[in-house]
Image 1 (cartoon, rainbow, N blue to C red):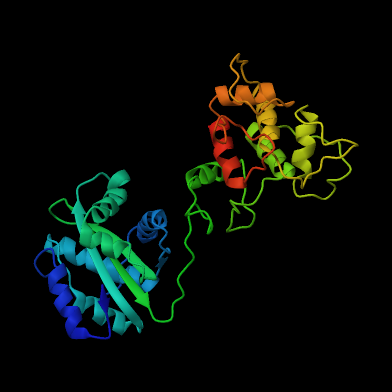
Image 2: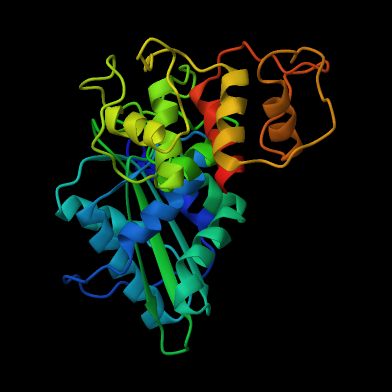
Length: 337
């Protein structure tokens, strides 16, 4: 990484990062970048894995990366030219505070090429340090095939002056990167079973509500529409249609007195009962827990036997414990995957 405040130190660092002979720059002219957005998406996946803010694609930096890719392909060798990068950023009027470049070549087929480039960088300590650098805010990437049949790739990372870092995201959400079940959350949202609590947040620690569960089950089972309005307390609710579909399919009876109680938190025993009902699980003679002597006893044993749910520790199931949305996502993935 290079900081503009001390040019001599930057050029000393440049010498340490060189991986091949210097590449002579070609004349500057517009060059179409290749797969820059895809490079950024892949790199941001790796950054999200370690809770580092994502980088943005910059059209200017992307074009500079394309020029560098063309240079490497023409020279048929790897190398860095930070004087060229600095000059080009200056020419385009980019105010920057840090600068890094990663390069690689491979001969992978096109469907695997970009993923392999990023994997190569990730498995190289100096390249990974740049790829996962917290200071960078913007990036560009491109590749070009040389006359030797090798594909040469470049990514240029820049910290642009006064740029505000983006929030850490995973699967499109800003609040799940630290969750142990984040992959389950991504799975249930990508498969349309659950949705977020907003466009960018999943609210993993919030308690699952009965209406949200109705939405998840209706989506997972793709239940048919109905014209009937079964309950009096869900009018205008976001999940009213899902609640009515679930009732029409005979998979819920509400909470009593013609109500559904859509905003009531779901408890573990109730979730076990709901999953047992919609999945028609096989019977089991095994009794797993000593605290499930409730109306959900059989359902709890069946969902555990099916590997969908587990206990809460010490031979207990905790049927009356409220369940969080992240926990529900993991259970629903195991139920419907």
